[in-house]
Length: 274
Image (cartoon, rainbow, N blue to C red):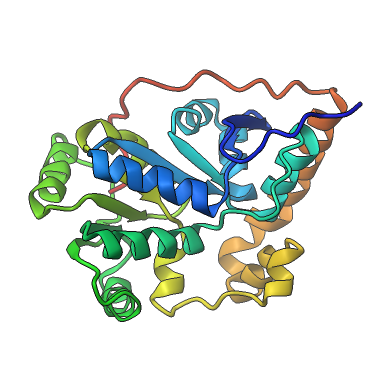
């Protein structure tokens, strides 16, 4: 059976029930920047296998992911799934750390200030000068480290007010998966700007993590590189989730499992990591 090519920018497709956009760097960056120019709330995340499996394992979270305006195929196995099941014809993934740099570059060129939310003070202290060094025209409106706790009553409004008062037009969120996706989902109604859940991008661009060689990225071996760097923290993620992802993908491709996406969530989240 021949599957019609979806084509870049042609909407979302189900990967194990999580709706992922058929997109590339150019399309994703432009959509984010357009929302920033128009002052529109716009929720973005880049999902690798771990991010997709958080939705598979938690249907409520799956609904939150399916409400995002843009979900990019961060990992090669997610790109492969789009190509294998839906004939997307994508030639590259849309990797969160790289997308971050492309958005920050455009923001600097257009004079749109950014806000950095999440991670630790030491990481942010290294990240800010690194970004300013890469993009001399960049305006960083505000920087706020994670509190590493759940939100208090009324705190989301307070965070939103701080971000809006800073003059920011784009928010980069580095809280780790899935906390950053829940934060982005919860904060989107309060902010008239894009929020990008960018995962480990803060650590990479602060110089705390080193990217694997290009050949490892091309052949979806980044997980092995990350596992070698942080075995105690990441072994369960990769050793358990990767085989589960492949098994479910095979079931979806063969038609044994429909992988029907749950409807996009609309209900607010009372408590979430800040």
